[in-house]
Image (cartoon, rainbow over all chains, first blue to last red):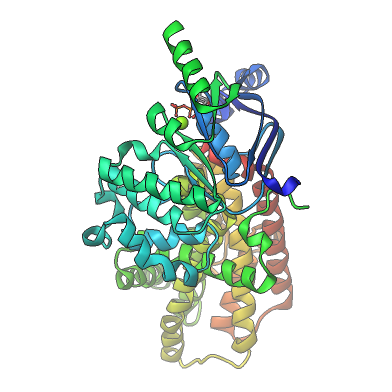
Length: 251
Length: 267
Ligand SMILES: Nc1ncnc2c1ncn2[C@@H]1O[C@H](COP(=O)(O)OP(=O)(O)OP(=O)(O)O)[C@@H](O)[C@H]1O
Ligand SMILES: [Mg+2]
């Protein structure tokens, strides 16, 4: 039954145009019009992702591993719907809570409490639904004393605590977590993994990106190995992590 | 079966309405808090700026240049307050998307809501400054007419739609050409002098009246002046203002819709 699938990627590619001349500004474009048009014609796309296909079943936890720049965060942003694929199709079923690289869509001038409301509403809840959860979110983040201080005064670990707390309290069907836990302290990390275990038992679909192979093997049902924008292999955690380590040694 | 089913889309109609109202309110609150640390000072500035301009212009043009316009200070205010909304939106629009990079990169939501909330923020400031205009009207022994009941909401609506279009257009373009700000400030300056604010529309020689229709903001400003100063709207200007409003909404909407999918990668 197709409802078993939470996320489906089919032949997904993502191209970026590097050194796009328009980025230089309007004046530059006008002053160097002929050369700029030539550059625009000749610019070569950079393939951040090439022909990636995989399915994630409902309730499954899949981890993405690979070297820096392999395309893991790009994949997650495509699933979150923040980026659009250049080719191929991304299908998702259910509500997504993305925790994409540091910071979860916060405004650093606002206080922690104000950011909970802002982030919650941006992620699809009404104000009332967020308010009902605010106390739990603050409780989980353990940021009681700082919750009314502006976010710019937070340490990076504290921002992550808040982001994770908001995301896990919004009852997502799909949770995307990109390396955010790396800056949390040991105690909070443990707490997060417990929460993720809980989500797994409850049948929440998760995609997890991390360079920490220990936690990857602990949490995931399957692991996907990326290299230079391609999906090299996907399968049983032990086998893929071994393959990854072999590759790293060989390189 | 819907591909990419977002949360709001799967919900019932009424919940979607509540959701979008909340989204606007939350973004509006953010705008307020980020822009003015202190709400009262923000309001004071939005009143003070056109007020000071009005005093300077009235000193200059009615005392030095001896321009013959009855109740000239009131006339100035009738144009300067709505113009301040126009110019604030044009300048603010450069940052509507750019200054919200952290939201655009991390969360999927209707990005044009950022523009709408910015424009509504200006609209609220404008409405809050209306008592000052009314105060001056009373001082010049004029008073709001009954037609305000429909004309004020109508003009507000026209201006909100127009400013949202302008904001979408400038905000989107500025992501691709980061130095657009300079150009915009030059154009706004130019349009200010091409709009009858310090002079009246009657002073324009017959050969140049087409400028009133060609200038995207002139008709709207003239409508507000008609309301605050002359007392009755001119249908021709009202129609022109509405047409420009629709044109901006269309233009801004198209540019935005074509480019919105790239926002997260270039912001
Ligand atoms: N907005 C962008 N414009 C141009 N190129 C980009 C953009 N975003 C990412 N890239 C490129 O895409 C490639 C993949 O980046 P991505 O962030 O997905 O890597 P990653 O696997 O998450 O790496 P890391 O482990 O360092 O987080 C990189 O080479 C990067 O240079
Ligand atoms: Mg990454």
